[in-house]
Length: 462
Ligand code: PMP
Image 1 (cartoon, rainbow, N blue to C red):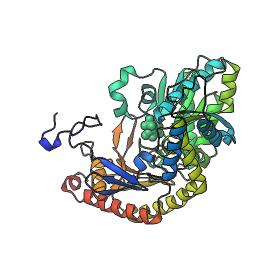
Image 2: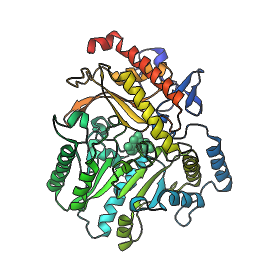
Image 3: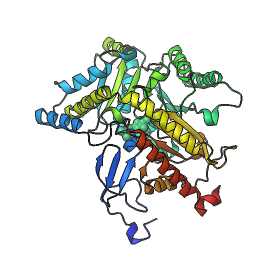
């Protein structure tokens, strides 16, 4: 299919996701929680890019820190050398051994962090004399990144389908903990957690008791299905199974971590510390490209007992300017109590969403933690029916809300063999958003949603 109208022709030499329809608008400036487009429109960035701009845009303190770093040292290779900014950022993140996490490596994207985590989990088992552990279990309705290793773990069929023959062998997916859709009538949270853990155990036994290297999971599912938040006790139950079979627990906190949930690390909600954790996005708020893998003393001891080094290295790892931005953002987190603000504003956002959408006939669930909240849309609240796949509800909502001046992160529903989910709108504004901005956000969101449900196209589908 080719673009049908002249004004549909892409005005870009960049290849974005779709060659059909309109090219994306250009954003030319940003400050705080707002973006400005080339046509002069001002947009409230209610998704902080994609949960990236944790302290908002254009903060002069971070810009100065990066400029200063680039003036002093713009780059070095890490084969022999290290740099003060990366050392200081690692010390800030794991110097106090949170839950036994003791070491870090810095990369440039969440995908690279997860790719490195896959390799680290595998190498750990080789080093401790268990090379038969080759298998990784992840979950349906998950997103772990863009590279072949990450797509191999990702549980979104549309992300996998073109690449299936190239994907890693030795991976499999189990159900997510998705109470809205999969907790049974009358089942308690504890019972549901036990049922999820039993599924993990059954999968480990199916693969082979000594063959699984890692269980790879987002602590709160982000973009894949809109803030799927596990029931209390889920991670404790999963951890017990991992420990029973010597499987490493890898938590992907690229999206849900670094304060977004109202706690610095999302695993703090249940106190279950991973063996390996990945972070990115909000770590330096997007001022430079930065992600990290954090690892526990157990993993480090494993490496130490063997070759003593991680067989992983990239040209831009531990980049001084990216680390300097991370340090500046972390220092603002501390001086402005950003995580605490997130918890407070998150409660306000949630309350405002409940007021605006609590009775909406097509909002099935409002869920999430902190400033990481989603609305899941359904045809019917009783049956939780999803919308027809040929109705691009998520895009319609995204566009209508954008036209009302707010940028959100939307995702399509689906119903396939590996699960059902509804179309959703994800909100992940800067963690220092104000109460006033939250009011503006929810008002525009309500108007945009109303605009879409008033269209004949959607009226017909419901
Ligand atoms: N993991 C999760 C949970 C994510 O949300 C993302 C990005 N949306 C990634 C990994 C990949 O990060 P990146 O796009 O920076 O490679």
